[in-house]
Length: 96
Image (cartoon, rainbow, N blue to C red):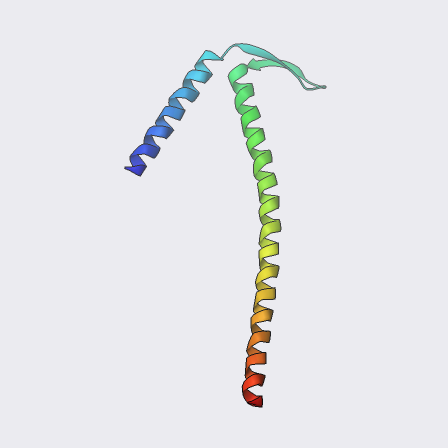
């Protein structure tokens, strides 16, 4: 049931995307300081979307690396604390 729902959502998104592209095919100017040209609006929107997606993925990956490094440090501290607890338990047993 859930996979059918996912397929339906993907199909609807694809239809909406194709309709959006078809309705926005008029030409629009592009001014990139050194380059001035015209391109279909749908292409400009797609390129903008992909660039935004890539930037967001880059930011996400940087944050992911930071969180993984933090997790690694926390795991190391936990392992050290567990080792210290074990050594304290073993010295307590030896004293008793």
